[in-house]
Image (cartoon, rainbow, N blue to C red; front, side, top):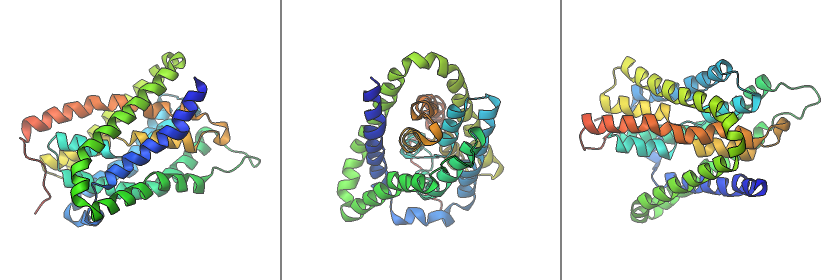
Length: 303
């Protein structure tokens, strides 16, 4: 079973992530990356919540829960992977501001190439420690891996969108369903494979993962309220800040960092795997709220 899990984490998970990011690329256009001026306050709220506050809260929760080093680093990895296709889908279902959601996802897809390696190096140095004889954390290797998992497939997806827009729009919904089911399958298989240790890990990781989700959703909504954003944008910020890119977190933890400084990727992957299930509680509540208070019209960009 261990060999099957290694194949799943080392091969199937990265391929699935690449396919997910490729599908997300087919929903993006160049203007999504340069549309920041259309949402100045909303983008500030989203980026502060996702890039700055999310890793800080993740670090504080890891300390508060007194997590073992591998689980603490796994939580930091999760906190370093904001947004993704799931947040775009939830924002759409909640009648949020979909262009804002897509813009934040587009920007974060570029930012994480630099922030993930930096946060990982800091987390490993704090929770594991290093000595002069240790091999340095492979920051460039992680950066290249994140680049290969995100920028490359997103760029290819955008190219397909550019060359065949009708095909991209037609296949998009089916592609999203496939990606969601594939990722859910991977999460369930990993949890099943680790079922012997799950009863030990779940009380620690389940509580801290749920706390991270609820706190960050509340922070996102709070930032939107402080900046006096409209309800549609506020809901989107809450979703974007509260929902993380768990497939990327799992790939970084289980594939790129496995064995670094003796760390066990099968353990580090657990915060992202469990979070990938728990985050839908708050997401479902926001969807019901949005559908009740925002009607059936999808969000549009501000004029």
